[in-house]
Structure formats: structure tokens, C-alpha cells
Image 1 (cartoon, rainbow, N blue to C red):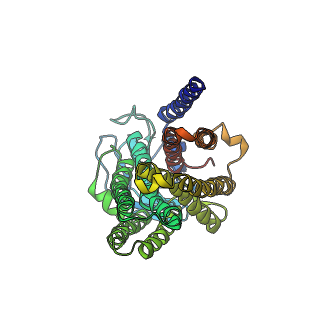
Image 2 (image 1 turned 45 degrees about the horizontal axis):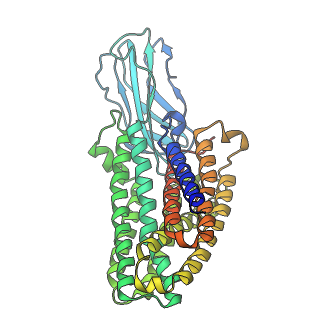
Length: 423
């Protein structure tokens, strides 16, 4: 019997490693990974004109905001041309241009889409003939460094959310009804929440760097771009997220005097932060924005409660008060986690419908493949939960595997937020 359990445990480790290998597989960062896509331009990319254009026009798939110098034009000599102020009319961005040289011109552009994600790219056109320093240049898109930094920022944010608010949900919804909130347990939960606070703040720092790097033509940090970003829709969401983190910090200080009232306030703050996250996701551009925002909030909070609760349980496992009532704690948290799983499934289905993810797109786009992997991966931690119920003396071992699987799913979720749904 023991050998059978050890074999099952080793098979489970293989499953977790398989999920990790999916996450480690490099994603292609092409034009399809941008949230606002360049539909067409005038002059067209790669075209040859008889006379230099007087205006450069770009059309995008959705309304955009201008950041820094949204359009730069470089002459065949390599020098940047002086251009007029850019203007936005619906989906069109245009700038007046005074060009005289013959040869190949380079145009770079950078904008922020409605869901606060950066989009940038470049293309060339020719006047009379191909010549100059840009003659061998091809069209380009957002940097891979920027993409991976965005993904890291989302992952840190979700981890911070789970630790910051999920652990508090465990304290109020599991431990308090069982009268297991001693001073030691309360302090350990608040310490977890403080770790979450630190991750939330770190996430915003990485997010700002990621946005700037994604928009800069050379993939470097530019203070002028950062200044423009802070004045855009991204900057508003960024500031509100930081404000939520600072408010959590204040409430955590109050919690040492009255953990219940401040805990309720912090859970409300977590719900508000989950709603705010929706404004920086695909929800803002979905069929029914209000329903997508609500579904996104419930989805994020459900994952936070499940992951944060599991981390709290593992942290408190050896505490004397918990050891005495372990079975009651496990049953109570099991019910809470079951509700979170149902919420994750239902809201995931709603969001997939609202984002118009068609069956034909599931295997023909990066977004569809990641979405499929995330949905399939949900069965792995559920399998560990089922096994742990049958192996009453090995709960903790299976919970560590459940935790690793949840972290893998969280990474896939961060990838989905970074990628756009297929158009």
C-alpha cells in the first residue's frame, strides 16, 4: 500500500513538471500579441512613392491614447525629422510631415490601448527608390523583454493579491468561526498579508518598467515615455492600484487592535481591487463591459481565496491550536475552496463567451492554446485534493503539490492577461 502511494506521488510530481514545461515553452511575441493592432497605414509599409508624403496616418483596431512622441519619422540619412503635433480622430492617428529626401524612411509608433496595454511597432516606406541607412530594415513590433516584464508584473500582482487578501479571507471565514484566532495565529496571517502588500507594490514598479520598455523603439527605459504613461489610462489604473496597496498597509496596522473590523474593510478593498483589475484587462473591451468586469472581479478573488487560503493553511499547519482541530479546519477550508473552484469555472466560461473566443480560435492562436492549457490544468490541483482526502495521513504532501499546480495556473492566467483574445 505504501509503495502504491509513493508511485502515485511520483506520478503527481511528473504532472506538475509537465505543467511547468508548458509554462517554460517560449511564446512567440509577434504582432498578434499586441492589444491595439495596426490595421493599415498611409503610406503603406514597404510601399514606394513618387513624392514624399505630407501626412502620415495610422489606423488601429481600437481607440488608443498617445504617449510621449507617438510617431517618429527618420529620414534616409538616419536623422529624425521634425514633425507636427499628432492628432487622434477615432481609430486614426495622424501627423503632418515635411520630407524632401529620396530613399527609405523609417516610421516608429507607440500608443496605449483602452485596456492600458502598450502597443508599438515600426515600418519603412520608400520615396522613388530603396536607399539609405534603413534600406535593409523590416517592420518590427513590441520587444520580447517588454512582453515578459508585463507577464512578470501580472504574476507578482496576482500572488500579492492572494497573499494580501486570500490569507485574510482564511482568517475571517475559516479560523474565526472555529474560534481559533489566537494572537500568534493572527500575527502569522497578518505577516502573510504584509508579504502580499510587498508583492503588490513590486508589481507596480515592474509594470511601469514593462510599459516603458514595450513602447521604446530600442527597448530601453525612457523618462519621457514614463511621464506620458502616468498621464494616460494606464497611469490612472497604476495610481489606484498603488493607493489600494497603501490603504491595505494602513488597515494592516489597525488590524493588530481589531482584526475583525479591519479585516472586513480589507476584504472589501480586495473586491474593489479585483474590479479595478478588470479595467486593465480584456473586460473593458468585451461585449458587455459591466458583466465582464463583474466576472473578472469574481474570477480574481476566487483564485486569491483558494491560493491564499492554501498558503495560510500550510503556514499554520504546525500551530498547536490548528493541530487540535485540524479536521474541522480542513473541512471548513475545503468548503470555501469548493465554492472558489465553482466560481472560477463559471466566471471563466462567462469571460470566454464575452471575449468571443470561438472554437476555431482555440488551436489557431497563442491565446487559445494558453486558455486551453489553463482550463485543463485546473484538473491537476483538483486531483490532488481528491487524493489527499483518501490519504488522511499525507495531507500536507499533497497540498504542496496542489500549491505548485495553482502557481502554474496563476502563471498561465498572467500570460492570458498579457495576450489579447483572438480577433
